[in-house]
Image (cartoon, rainbow, N blue to C red):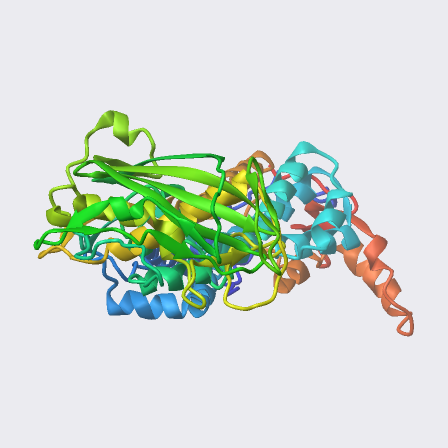
Length: 594
Protein backbone atom coordinates (compact mmCIF):
# COMPACT_ATOMS: atom_id res chain seq x y z
CA UNK A 1 0.00 0.00 0.00
CA UNK A 2 1.15 3.57 -0.65
CA UNK A 3 2.20 5.05 2.64
CA UNK A 4 3.28 8.64 3.33
CA UNK A 5 5.69 8.90 6.21
CA UNK A 6 4.10 11.08 8.89
CA UNK A 7 6.75 11.80 11.54
CA UNK A 8 5.81 11.12 15.11
CA UNK A 9 6.93 14.18 17.07
CA UNK A 10 9.07 13.52 20.11
CA UNK A 11 7.84 14.41 23.53
CA UNK A 12 8.83 17.85 24.72
CA UNK A 13 10.14 18.02 28.29
CA UNK A 14 9.30 20.54 31.01
CA UNK A 15 12.41 19.94 33.16
CA UNK A 16 13.71 21.27 36.40
CA UNK A 17 17.29 22.51 35.95
CA UNK A 18 18.65 19.74 38.18
CA UNK A 19 16.33 16.91 36.93
CA UNK A 20 18.12 14.55 34.49
CA UNK A 21 15.34 11.96 34.13
CA UNK A 22 12.85 11.93 31.25
CA UNK A 23 9.75 13.91 31.91
CA UNK A 24 6.39 12.20 32.23
CA UNK A 25 4.44 15.36 31.50
CA UNK A 26 4.75 15.67 27.70
CA UNK A 27 3.08 17.55 24.88
CA UNK A 28 2.00 15.11 22.13
CA UNK A 29 0.61 16.16 18.73
CA UNK A 30 -2.01 13.70 17.47
CA UNK A 31 -2.91 13.10 13.81
CA UNK A 32 -5.24 10.15 14.16
CA UNK A 33 -8.26 10.93 11.98
CA UNK A 34 -9.95 8.25 9.86
CA UNK A 35 -9.92 10.50 6.80
CA UNK A 36 -6.20 11.00 7.25
CA UNK A 37 -5.71 7.21 7.22
CA UNK A 38 -7.71 6.87 3.98
CA UNK A 39 -5.99 9.87 2.39
CA UNK A 40 -2.56 8.36 2.93
CA UNK A 41 -3.71 4.89 1.76
CA UNK A 42 -5.59 5.76 -1.42
CA UNK A 43 -5.59 2.19 -2.72
CA UNK A 44 -8.23 1.39 -0.08
CA UNK A 45 -11.06 3.53 -1.56
CA UNK A 46 -9.97 2.60 -5.08
CA UNK A 47 -10.20 -1.12 -4.25
CA UNK A 48 -13.56 -0.57 -2.57
CA UNK A 49 -14.95 1.24 -5.62
CA UNK A 50 -13.67 -1.48 -7.95
CA UNK A 51 -15.28 -4.09 -5.72
CA UNK A 52 -18.63 -2.29 -5.84
CA UNK A 53 -18.44 -1.85 -9.61
CA UNK A 54 -17.50 -5.46 -10.35
CA UNK A 55 -20.06 -6.88 -7.91
CA UNK A 56 -22.82 -4.70 -9.38
CA UNK A 57 -21.85 -5.77 -12.89
CA UNK A 58 -21.84 -9.49 -12.08
CA UNK A 59 -25.12 -9.39 -10.13
CA UNK A 60 -26.94 -7.16 -12.65
CA UNK A 61 -25.89 -9.29 -15.61
CA UNK A 62 -26.83 -12.55 -13.88
CA UNK A 63 -30.17 -11.07 -12.78
CA UNK A 64 -30.94 -10.10 -16.38
CA UNK A 65 -29.94 -13.53 -17.66
CA UNK A 66 -32.16 -15.21 -15.06
CA UNK A 67 -35.16 -13.48 -16.61
CA UNK A 68 -34.48 -15.00 -20.03
CA UNK A 69 -35.63 -18.41 -21.21
CA UNK A 70 -32.73 -20.59 -22.32
CA UNK A 71 -34.86 -23.14 -24.18
CA UNK A 72 -38.09 -23.01 -26.15
CA UNK A 73 -40.08 -26.04 -27.31
CA UNK A 74 -39.90 -26.43 -31.07
CA UNK A 75 -43.67 -26.59 -31.28
CA UNK A 76 -44.29 -23.38 -29.32
CA UNK A 77 -45.51 -20.50 -31.49
CA UNK A 78 -45.22 -17.80 -28.81
CA UNK A 79 -41.77 -18.60 -27.45
CA UNK A 80 -38.54 -17.28 -28.93
CA UNK A 81 -34.99 -16.71 -27.75
CA UNK A 82 -33.06 -13.59 -28.85
CA UNK A 83 -29.79 -14.32 -30.68
CA UNK A 84 -27.61 -12.85 -27.88
CA UNK A 85 -29.28 -15.13 -25.35
CA UNK A 86 -28.80 -18.10 -27.69
CA UNK A 87 -25.09 -17.33 -27.84
CA UNK A 88 -24.89 -17.06 -24.06
CA UNK A 89 -26.77 -20.36 -23.70
CA UNK A 90 -24.49 -22.14 -26.15
CA UNK A 91 -21.44 -20.81 -24.30
CA UNK A 92 -22.85 -20.99 -20.79
CA UNK A 93 -19.67 -22.55 -19.40
CA UNK A 94 -17.55 -19.65 -20.61
CA UNK A 95 -20.13 -17.14 -19.40
CA UNK A 96 -20.15 -18.74 -15.96
CA UNK A 97 -16.36 -18.59 -15.85
CA UNK A 98 -16.32 -14.88 -16.72
CA UNK A 99 -19.01 -14.06 -14.15
CA UNK A 100 -17.05 -16.04 -11.56
CA UNK A 101 -13.91 -14.05 -12.40
CA UNK A 102 -15.69 -10.68 -12.12
CA UNK A 103 -17.55 -11.63 -8.96
CA UNK A 104 -14.48 -13.14 -7.26
CA UNK A 105 -12.45 -10.05 -8.19
CA UNK A 106 -15.09 -7.83 -6.60
CA UNK A 107 -14.97 -9.76 -3.33
CA UNK A 108 -11.17 -9.84 -3.38
CA UNK A 109 -11.03 -6.07 -3.92
CA UNK A 110 -13.40 -5.43 -1.01
CA UNK A 111 -11.43 -7.89 1.11
CA UNK A 112 -8.24 -5.97 0.30
CA UNK A 113 -9.83 -2.78 1.60
CA UNK A 114 -11.21 -4.49 4.70
CA UNK A 115 -7.89 -6.15 5.54
CA UNK A 116 -6.31 -2.70 5.86
CA UNK A 117 -8.23 -2.08 9.10
CA UNK A 118 -7.44 -5.57 10.29
CA UNK A 119 -3.76 -4.83 9.77
CA UNK A 120 -4.02 -1.42 11.44
CA UNK A 121 -5.66 -2.99 14.50
CA UNK A 122 -2.37 -4.53 15.58
CA UNK A 123 -1.23 -1.24 17.18
CA UNK A 124 -4.04 -0.93 19.78
CA UNK A 125 -3.80 -4.69 20.43
CA UNK A 126 -0.08 -4.28 21.17
CA UNK A 127 -0.99 -1.43 23.50
CA UNK A 128 -3.10 -3.85 25.58
CA UNK A 129 -0.66 -6.66 26.25
CA UNK A 130 2.71 -7.99 25.05
CA UNK A 131 2.99 -10.25 22.00
CA UNK A 132 6.06 -11.96 20.63
CA UNK A 133 7.50 -10.93 17.29
CA UNK A 134 6.53 -14.36 15.92
CA UNK A 135 2.93 -13.95 17.08
CA UNK A 136 2.83 -10.54 15.44
CA UNK A 137 4.05 -12.05 12.16
CA UNK A 138 1.30 -14.69 12.32
CA UNK A 139 -1.34 -12.04 13.03
CA UNK A 140 -0.15 -9.88 10.14
CA UNK A 141 -0.17 -12.87 7.75
CA UNK A 142 -3.75 -13.61 8.79
CA UNK A 143 -4.75 -9.96 8.47
CA UNK A 144 -3.45 -9.96 4.90
CA UNK A 145 -5.57 -12.93 3.84
CA UNK A 146 -3.47 -16.00 4.65
CA UNK A 147 -5.85 -18.90 5.30
CA UNK A 148 -3.29 -21.20 7.06
CA UNK A 149 -2.19 -18.38 9.38
CA UNK A 150 -5.72 -17.63 10.58
CA UNK A 151 -6.27 -20.71 12.81
CA UNK A 152 -2.71 -20.37 14.16
CA UNK A 153 -3.40 -16.76 15.10
CA UNK A 154 -6.48 -17.84 17.08
CA UNK A 155 -4.20 -19.86 19.38
CA UNK A 156 -2.69 -16.63 20.70
CA UNK A 157 -5.96 -14.80 21.36
CA UNK A 158 -5.93 -13.50 24.93
CA UNK A 159 -8.94 -11.16 25.12
CA UNK A 160 -12.21 -10.24 23.45
CA UNK A 161 -10.73 -7.35 21.47
CA UNK A 162 -8.22 -9.58 19.71
CA UNK A 163 -10.82 -12.32 19.24
CA UNK A 164 -13.27 -9.97 17.53
CA UNK A 165 -10.59 -8.60 15.22
CA UNK A 166 -9.48 -12.11 14.25
CA UNK A 167 -13.06 -13.31 13.71
CA UNK A 168 -13.70 -10.38 11.37
CA UNK A 169 -10.37 -11.06 9.67
CA UNK A 170 -11.22 -14.74 9.16
CA UNK A 171 -14.61 -13.86 7.65
CA UNK A 172 -13.04 -11.33 5.31
CA UNK A 173 -10.51 -13.96 4.20
CA UNK A 174 -13.06 -16.71 3.65
CA UNK A 175 -15.85 -14.74 1.95
CA UNK A 176 -14.02 -14.39 -1.43
CA UNK A 177 -13.53 -18.17 -1.46
CA UNK A 178 -17.31 -18.61 -1.75
CA UNK A 179 -17.41 -16.91 -5.16
CA UNK A 180 -16.79 -19.95 -7.37
CA UNK A 181 -19.20 -22.43 -5.70
CA UNK A 182 -21.87 -19.76 -5.27
CA UNK A 183 -21.75 -18.67 -8.92
CA UNK A 184 -21.81 -22.34 -9.92
CA UNK A 185 -24.92 -22.83 -7.78
CA UNK A 186 -26.58 -19.77 -9.32
CA UNK A 187 -25.74 -20.87 -12.88
CA UNK A 188 -27.11 -24.38 -12.34
CA UNK A 189 -30.02 -24.35 -14.76
CA UNK A 190 -33.39 -25.16 -13.25
CA UNK A 191 -36.44 -26.71 -14.84
CA UNK A 192 -39.26 -24.20 -14.49
CA UNK A 193 -42.88 -24.08 -15.72
CA UNK A 194 -43.63 -22.41 -19.05
CA UNK A 195 -47.01 -21.57 -20.55
CA UNK A 196 -46.80 -21.98 -24.30
CA UNK A 197 -49.15 -21.96 -27.26
CA UNK A 198 -49.09 -24.40 -30.15
CA UNK A 199 -51.13 -25.48 -33.14
CA UNK A 200 -53.14 -28.69 -33.16
CA UNK A 201 -54.96 -30.30 -36.06
CA UNK A 202 -58.34 -31.66 -35.06
CA UNK A 203 -60.83 -33.69 -37.01
CA UNK A 204 -60.34 -37.38 -37.70
CA UNK A 205 -62.36 -40.08 -39.38
CA UNK A 206 -62.35 -42.60 -42.18
CA UNK A 207 -64.21 -43.14 -45.41
CA UNK A 208 -63.77 -46.92 -45.27
CA UNK A 209 -65.96 -49.60 -43.75
CA UNK A 210 -64.60 -52.51 -41.78
CA UNK A 211 -65.23 -55.89 -43.41
CA UNK A 212 -64.03 -59.39 -42.62
CA UNK A 213 -63.72 -61.44 -45.75
CA UNK A 214 -61.87 -64.56 -46.67
CA UNK A 215 -59.04 -63.80 -47.32
CA UNK A 216 -58.84 -60.67 -45.08
CA UNK A 217 -57.61 -57.36 -46.46
CA UNK A 218 -55.76 -54.89 -44.24
CA UNK A 219 -56.85 -51.33 -44.85
CA UNK A 220 -54.93 -49.60 -42.03
CA UNK A 221 -51.30 -50.45 -42.73
CA UNK A 222 -49.91 -47.58 -40.55
CA UNK A 223 -51.76 -49.03 -37.56
CA UNK A 224 -50.07 -52.38 -38.20
CA UNK A 225 -46.66 -50.70 -38.32
CA UNK A 226 -47.33 -48.78 -35.09
CA UNK A 227 -48.46 -51.85 -33.19
CA UNK A 228 -45.53 -53.94 -34.49
CA UNK A 229 -43.03 -51.29 -33.35
CA UNK A 230 -44.63 -51.16 -29.88
CA UNK A 231 -44.60 -54.94 -29.56
CA UNK A 232 -40.98 -55.39 -30.63
CA UNK A 233 -40.42 -52.86 -28.90
CA UNK A 234 -38.73 -50.48 -31.31
CA UNK A 235 -40.72 -47.55 -29.97
CA UNK A 236 -43.11 -46.85 -27.13
CA UNK A 237 -46.78 -46.04 -27.23
CA UNK A 238 -47.27 -42.30 -26.64
CA UNK A 239 -49.33 -41.23 -23.65
CA UNK A 240 -50.33 -44.72 -22.52
CA UNK A 241 -52.24 -43.24 -19.58
CA UNK A 242 -54.44 -41.35 -22.05
CA UNK A 243 -55.01 -44.07 -24.65
CA UNK A 244 -58.80 -43.80 -24.14
CA UNK A 245 -58.87 -40.43 -25.90
CA UNK A 246 -59.34 -39.75 -29.59
CA UNK A 247 -56.37 -37.38 -29.86
CA UNK A 248 -52.98 -37.43 -31.56
CA UNK A 249 -50.77 -38.75 -28.78
CA UNK A 250 -47.61 -38.15 -30.79
CA UNK A 251 -48.31 -34.41 -30.99
CA UNK A 252 -49.49 -34.02 -27.40
CA UNK A 253 -46.81 -36.18 -25.77
CA UNK A 254 -44.31 -33.34 -25.35
CA UNK A 255 -46.72 -30.46 -24.84
CA UNK A 256 -46.91 -30.82 -21.07
CA UNK A 257 -50.02 -30.27 -18.96
CA UNK A 258 -53.19 -29.08 -20.59
CA UNK A 259 -56.96 -29.09 -20.27
CA UNK A 260 -59.17 -29.23 -23.36
CA UNK A 261 -62.42 -30.59 -24.69
CA UNK A 262 -61.85 -33.82 -26.61
CA UNK A 263 -63.54 -37.06 -27.66
CA UNK A 264 -63.18 -39.89 -25.19
CA UNK A 265 -63.46 -43.60 -25.93
CA UNK A 266 -65.97 -44.85 -23.38
CA UNK A 267 -64.75 -48.41 -23.47
CA UNK A 268 -65.72 -51.69 -21.81
CA UNK A 269 -64.10 -55.08 -22.41
CA UNK A 270 -65.71 -58.29 -21.19
CA UNK A 271 -64.26 -61.73 -21.92
CA UNK A 272 -65.82 -65.14 -21.31
CA UNK A 273 -65.26 -68.72 -22.34
CA UNK A 274 -66.40 -69.54 -25.87
CA UNK A 275 -67.17 -72.86 -27.48
CA UNK A 276 -65.93 -73.14 -31.07
CA UNK A 277 -67.95 -75.66 -33.07
CA UNK A 278 -67.84 -77.06 -36.56
CA UNK A 279 -64.19 -76.50 -37.33
CA UNK A 280 -64.02 -77.94 -40.79
CA UNK A 281 -60.93 -77.77 -42.97
CA UNK A 282 -59.57 -74.92 -40.86
CA UNK A 283 -62.65 -72.75 -41.27
CA UNK A 284 -65.06 -71.40 -38.65
CA UNK A 285 -68.50 -69.84 -38.98
CA UNK A 286 -69.29 -66.24 -37.97
CA UNK A 287 -72.34 -63.99 -37.83
CA UNK A 288 -70.65 -61.19 -39.74
CA UNK A 289 -72.49 -62.04 -42.97
CA UNK A 290 -75.73 -60.98 -41.29
CA UNK A 291 -74.30 -57.56 -40.32
CA UNK A 292 -74.50 -54.98 -43.08
CA UNK A 293 -73.42 -51.45 -43.86
CA UNK A 294 -74.66 -48.97 -46.46
CA UNK A 295 -72.09 -47.63 -48.90
CA UNK A 296 -74.66 -45.39 -50.59
CA UNK A 297 -75.72 -48.00 -53.13
CA UNK A 298 -77.41 -50.42 -50.79
CA UNK A 299 -76.68 -52.70 -47.83
CA UNK A 300 -73.58 -54.89 -48.02
CA UNK A 301 -72.52 -57.69 -45.64
CA UNK A 302 -69.65 -56.95 -43.25
CA UNK A 303 -68.07 -60.33 -43.69
CA UNK A 304 -68.04 -63.79 -45.14
CA UNK A 305 -70.04 -66.62 -43.63
CA UNK A 306 -66.80 -68.43 -42.81
CA UNK A 307 -63.21 -67.38 -42.30
CA UNK A 308 -60.04 -69.44 -42.56
CA UNK A 309 -57.66 -70.16 -39.70
CA UNK A 310 -53.97 -70.76 -40.15
CA UNK A 311 -53.46 -74.13 -38.51
CA UNK A 312 -50.37 -73.25 -36.54
CA UNK A 313 -49.86 -73.54 -32.77
CA UNK A 314 -50.35 -69.82 -32.04
CA UNK A 315 -53.03 -67.32 -31.04
CA UNK A 316 -55.57 -66.31 -33.67
CA UNK A 317 -58.51 -63.93 -33.62
CA UNK A 318 -61.63 -63.32 -35.70
CA UNK A 319 -64.78 -61.24 -35.52
CA UNK A 320 -67.88 -63.20 -34.67
CA UNK A 321 -70.38 -60.34 -34.45
CA UNK A 322 -70.74 -56.58 -34.79
CA UNK A 323 -73.51 -54.25 -33.65
CA UNK A 324 -74.10 -50.49 -33.85
CA UNK A 325 -76.34 -49.44 -30.93
CA UNK A 326 -76.08 -45.72 -31.82
CA UNK A 327 -74.53 -43.32 -34.29
CA UNK A 328 -71.39 -43.00 -32.18
CA UNK A 329 -71.19 -46.46 -30.63
CA UNK A 330 -70.09 -49.91 -31.77
CA UNK A 331 -69.88 -53.28 -30.07
CA UNK A 332 -67.92 -56.20 -31.44
CA UNK A 333 -67.54 -59.80 -30.37
CA UNK A 334 -64.06 -61.13 -31.08
CA UNK A 335 -63.02 -64.73 -30.58
CA UNK A 336 -59.47 -65.40 -29.39
CA UNK A 337 -58.36 -68.99 -29.88
CA UNK A 338 -55.08 -70.58 -28.82
CA UNK A 339 -54.28 -73.53 -31.09
CA UNK A 340 -52.51 -76.36 -29.26
CA UNK A 341 -52.37 -73.94 -26.32
CA UNK A 342 -54.52 -72.65 -23.51
CA UNK A 343 -56.32 -69.44 -22.56
CA UNK A 344 -57.38 -68.40 -19.11
CA UNK A 345 -61.13 -69.16 -18.73
CA UNK A 346 -61.13 -70.62 -22.24
CA UNK A 347 -63.34 -73.51 -23.37
CA UNK A 348 -61.48 -76.32 -25.17
CA UNK A 349 -62.55 -77.72 -28.50
CA UNK A 350 -61.41 -80.77 -30.44
CA UNK A 351 -59.79 -80.20 -33.85
CA UNK A 352 -59.27 -82.82 -36.53
CA UNK A 353 -55.94 -81.85 -38.04
CA UNK A 354 -52.60 -83.55 -38.43
CA UNK A 355 -50.74 -80.78 -36.53
CA UNK A 356 -53.44 -79.07 -34.47
CA UNK A 357 -55.32 -81.29 -32.06
CA UNK A 358 -57.11 -78.81 -29.83
CA UNK A 359 -57.82 -75.18 -29.15
CA UNK A 360 -59.16 -73.10 -26.31
CA UNK A 361 -61.19 -69.98 -27.00
CA UNK A 362 -62.70 -66.97 -25.29
CA UNK A 363 -65.10 -64.41 -26.72
CA UNK A 364 -64.50 -60.76 -25.80
CA UNK A 365 -67.20 -58.14 -26.17
CA UNK A 366 -65.58 -54.79 -26.94
CA UNK A 367 -67.98 -51.87 -26.53
CA UNK A 368 -66.76 -48.42 -27.62
CA UNK A 369 -68.86 -45.28 -27.33
CA UNK A 370 -67.47 -41.95 -28.55
CA UNK A 371 -68.42 -39.12 -26.16
CA UNK A 372 -67.42 -35.50 -25.67
CA UNK A 373 -65.48 -34.93 -22.46
CA UNK A 374 -62.69 -32.84 -20.94
CA UNK A 375 -59.16 -34.16 -21.30
CA UNK A 376 -56.96 -33.32 -18.31
CA UNK A 377 -53.26 -33.97 -18.76
CA UNK A 378 -51.30 -33.43 -15.58
CA UNK A 379 -54.18 -31.96 -13.56
CA UNK A 380 -57.00 -34.42 -13.05
CA UNK A 381 -59.04 -31.83 -11.14
CA UNK A 382 -59.56 -29.70 -14.24
CA UNK A 383 -62.58 -31.80 -15.20
CA UNK A 384 -64.30 -30.79 -11.97
CA UNK A 385 -63.38 -27.13 -12.48
CA UNK A 386 -64.71 -27.25 -16.07
CA UNK A 387 -62.94 -23.98 -16.80
CA UNK A 388 -61.30 -24.79 -20.14
CA UNK A 389 -62.51 -23.24 -23.36
CA UNK A 390 -60.10 -24.84 -25.84
CA UNK A 391 -61.06 -27.86 -27.93
CA UNK A 392 -58.89 -30.57 -29.47
CA UNK A 393 -61.62 -32.73 -31.01
CA UNK A 394 -65.37 -33.04 -30.74
CA UNK A 395 -68.02 -35.31 -32.19
CA UNK A 396 -69.20 -32.56 -34.51
CA UNK A 397 -65.66 -32.11 -35.88
CA UNK A 398 -65.20 -35.78 -36.71
CA UNK A 399 -66.36 -36.91 -40.12
CA UNK A 400 -70.05 -37.38 -39.24
CA UNK A 401 -70.82 -39.93 -41.96
CA UNK A 402 -68.35 -42.39 -40.45
CA UNK A 403 -68.69 -41.60 -36.73
CA UNK A 404 -69.87 -45.05 -35.68
CA UNK A 405 -67.63 -46.59 -38.33
CA UNK A 406 -64.69 -45.16 -36.41
CA UNK A 407 -65.97 -46.97 -33.35
CA UNK A 408 -66.25 -50.18 -35.41
CA UNK A 409 -62.63 -49.97 -36.56
CA UNK A 410 -61.42 -49.54 -32.99
CA UNK A 411 -63.69 -52.32 -31.72
CA UNK A 412 -62.08 -54.60 -34.35
CA UNK A 413 -58.55 -53.35 -33.59
CA UNK A 414 -56.97 -56.73 -32.62
CA UNK A 415 -57.80 -57.99 -36.12
CA UNK A 416 -56.84 -54.75 -37.87
CA UNK A 417 -53.28 -54.70 -36.47
CA UNK A 418 -52.61 -58.30 -37.51
CA UNK A 419 -51.05 -59.72 -40.66
CA UNK A 420 -52.70 -62.42 -42.73
CA UNK A 421 -50.60 -65.43 -43.70
CA UNK A 422 -51.82 -67.66 -46.54
CA UNK A 423 -55.17 -65.85 -46.62
CA UNK A 424 -56.03 -66.83 -43.05
CA UNK A 425 -56.98 -64.76 -40.01
CA UNK A 426 -54.07 -62.97 -38.28
CA UNK A 427 -52.04 -64.86 -35.71
CA UNK A 428 -49.87 -63.74 -32.82
CA UNK A 429 -47.23 -65.35 -30.66
CA UNK A 430 -45.92 -64.69 -27.20
CA UNK A 431 -42.27 -63.76 -26.64
CA UNK A 432 -40.88 -63.92 -23.08
CA UNK A 433 -40.54 -60.50 -21.39
CA UNK A 434 -42.22 -58.80 -24.35
CA UNK A 435 -44.86 -56.16 -23.55
CA UNK A 436 -47.32 -57.26 -26.25
CA UNK A 437 -48.08 -60.23 -28.52
CA UNK A 438 -45.95 -60.28 -31.68
CA UNK A 439 -47.25 -60.54 -35.21
CA UNK A 440 -46.95 -64.13 -36.44
CA UNK A 441 -45.60 -64.41 -39.99
CA UNK A 442 -43.58 -67.66 -39.89
CA UNK A 443 -44.32 -71.36 -39.71
CA UNK A 444 -42.48 -72.10 -36.50
CA UNK A 445 -43.66 -71.94 -32.94
CA UNK A 446 -45.53 -73.81 -30.26
CA UNK A 447 -48.73 -73.37 -28.33
CA UNK A 448 -48.62 -70.88 -25.46
CA UNK A 449 -50.73 -70.11 -22.44
CA UNK A 450 -52.51 -66.77 -22.57
CA UNK A 451 -53.86 -64.94 -19.55
CA UNK A 452 -56.82 -62.57 -19.40
CA UNK A 453 -54.44 -59.75 -18.49
CA UNK A 454 -52.37 -60.37 -21.62
CA UNK A 455 -55.45 -60.38 -23.84
CA UNK A 456 -56.81 -57.18 -22.30
CA UNK A 457 -53.44 -55.44 -22.72
CA UNK A 458 -53.36 -56.63 -26.33
CA UNK A 459 -56.86 -55.27 -26.99
CA UNK A 460 -56.10 -51.87 -25.42
CA UNK A 461 -52.79 -51.44 -27.26
CA UNK A 462 -54.31 -52.41 -30.61
CA UNK A 463 -57.21 -49.97 -30.09
CA UNK A 464 -54.66 -47.23 -29.39
CA UNK A 465 -52.70 -48.07 -32.56
CA UNK A 466 -55.86 -47.90 -34.67
CA UNK A 467 -57.00 -44.68 -32.98
CA UNK A 468 -53.65 -43.00 -33.74
CA UNK A 469 -54.20 -43.77 -37.41
CA UNK A 470 -57.85 -42.70 -37.54
CA UNK A 471 -57.25 -39.43 -35.70
CA UNK A 472 -54.96 -38.10 -38.45
CA UNK A 473 -57.40 -39.01 -41.24
CA UNK A 474 -59.97 -36.48 -42.44
CA UNK A 475 -58.18 -33.55 -40.71
CA UNK A 476 -60.05 -30.37 -39.89
CA UNK A 477 -59.79 -27.47 -42.32
CA UNK A 478 -58.07 -25.21 -39.80
CA UNK A 479 -55.68 -25.76 -36.93
CA UNK A 480 -56.65 -24.71 -33.44
CA UNK A 481 -54.41 -22.94 -30.96
CA UNK A 482 -53.99 -24.63 -27.61
CA UNK A 483 -52.22 -23.47 -24.49
CA UNK A 484 -50.36 -25.92 -22.31
CA UNK A 485 -48.08 -25.85 -19.32
CA UNK A 486 -44.70 -27.32 -20.16
CA UNK A 487 -41.18 -26.74 -18.84
CA UNK A 488 -38.08 -24.85 -19.85
CA UNK A 489 -34.65 -24.33 -18.34
CA UNK A 490 -33.35 -21.04 -17.01
CA UNK A 491 -31.49 -19.47 -14.14
CA UNK A 492 -33.72 -18.69 -11.18
CA UNK A 493 -33.85 -15.16 -9.79
CA UNK A 494 -34.16 -16.54 -6.26
CA UNK A 495 -30.67 -17.98 -6.53
CA UNK A 496 -29.30 -14.80 -8.07
CA UNK A 497 -30.27 -12.95 -4.89
CA UNK A 498 -27.78 -15.13 -3.05
CA UNK A 499 -24.98 -13.24 -4.80
CA UNK A 500 -25.87 -10.23 -2.67
CA UNK A 501 -25.25 -12.18 0.53
CA UNK A 502 -21.40 -12.34 0.42
CA UNK A 503 -21.20 -8.69 -0.63
CA UNK A 504 -23.52 -7.60 2.17
CA UNK A 505 -21.70 -9.80 4.67
CA UNK A 506 -18.36 -8.36 3.58
CA UNK A 507 -19.62 -4.80 4.05
CA UNK A 508 -21.15 -5.56 7.45
CA UNK A 509 -17.97 -7.25 8.69
CA UNK A 510 -15.89 -4.44 7.26
CA UNK A 511 -18.05 -1.82 9.01
CA UNK A 512 -17.78 -3.74 12.27
CA UNK A 513 -14.01 -4.02 11.93
CA UNK A 514 -13.60 -0.33 11.09
CA UNK A 515 -15.78 0.69 14.03
CA UNK A 516 -14.00 -1.63 16.45
CA UNK A 517 -10.57 -0.57 15.22
CA UNK A 518 -11.49 3.09 15.64
CA UNK A 519 -12.85 2.38 19.11
CA UNK A 520 -9.61 0.64 20.13
CA UNK A 521 -7.48 3.45 18.71
CA UNK A 522 -9.44 6.00 20.74
CA UNK A 523 -9.57 3.82 23.85
CA UNK A 524 -5.79 3.39 23.98
CA UNK A 525 -5.12 6.87 22.57
CA UNK A 526 -3.02 5.60 19.68
CA UNK A 527 -1.62 8.78 18.11
CA UNK A 528 -1.86 7.72 14.46
CA UNK A 529 -3.95 5.36 12.30
CA UNK A 530 -1.43 3.48 10.18
CA UNK A 531 -0.78 0.14 8.57
CA UNK A 532 1.73 -2.40 9.83
CA UNK A 533 4.04 -2.20 6.84
CA UNK A 534 7.77 -2.93 7.04
CA UNK A 535 8.59 0.77 7.06
CA UNK A 536 6.17 1.42 9.93
CA UNK A 537 7.65 -1.45 11.95
CA UNK A 538 11.19 -0.21 11.34
CA UNK A 539 10.07 3.18 12.53
CA UNK A 540 8.52 1.73 15.70
CA UNK A 541 11.56 -0.46 16.40
CA UNK A 542 13.91 2.49 16.95
CA UNK A 543 13.74 2.01 20.72
CA UNK A 544 16.52 1.31 23.18
CA UNK A 545 15.11 -2.10 24.07
CA UNK A 546 14.66 -3.36 20.47
CA UNK A 547 17.99 -1.99 19.29
CA UNK A 548 19.80 -3.67 22.18
CA UNK A 549 18.14 -7.06 21.51
CA UNK A 550 18.70 -6.79 17.76
CA UNK A 551 22.35 -5.87 18.24
CA UNK A 552 22.96 -8.98 20.34
CA UNK A 553 21.10 -11.18 17.88
CA UNK A 554 22.99 -9.75 14.90
CA UNK A 555 26.28 -11.06 16.29
CA UNK A 556 25.12 -14.60 15.42
CA UNK A 557 25.00 -14.14 11.65
CA UNK A 558 25.24 -17.87 10.93
CA UNK A 559 22.05 -18.84 12.81
CA UNK A 560 18.37 -17.91 12.38
CA UNK A 561 17.16 -14.93 14.33
CA UNK A 562 15.93 -15.43 17.89
CA UNK A 563 13.94 -12.21 17.88
CA UNK A 564 10.74 -14.16 17.16
CA UNK A 565 10.52 -15.01 20.85
CA UNK A 566 10.94 -11.40 21.93
CA UNK A 567 7.73 -10.04 23.50
CA UNK A 568 6.96 -6.36 23.10
CA UNK A 569 4.18 -3.84 23.58
CA UNK A 570 3.39 -0.60 21.81
CA UNK A 571 3.47 2.65 23.77
CA UNK A 572 5.77 5.35 25.04
CA UNK A 573 9.31 4.18 25.56
CA UNK A 574 12.88 5.45 25.50
CA UNK A 575 14.34 6.04 22.08
CA UNK A 576 17.92 5.61 20.92
CA UNK A 577 18.95 9.26 20.96
CA UNK A 578 21.40 10.61 23.53
CA UNK A 579 18.71 12.63 25.30
CA UNK A 580 16.71 9.44 26.03
CA UNK A 581 13.55 11.07 24.66
CA UNK A 582 10.24 9.16 24.86
CA UNK A 583 8.92 8.01 21.50
CA UNK A 584 6.01 5.86 20.28
CA UNK A 585 7.56 2.46 19.75
CA UNK A 586 7.89 -1.21 20.67
CA UNK A 587 9.54 -2.38 23.89
CA UNK A 588 9.11 -4.88 26.68
CA UNK A 589 7.84 -2.22 29.06
CA UNK A 590 6.07 0.90 27.83
CA UNK A 591 3.96 3.70 29.18
CA UNK A 592 0.45 4.31 27.92
CA UNK A 593 -0.31 7.27 25.73
CA UNK A 594 -1.66 10.33 27.56
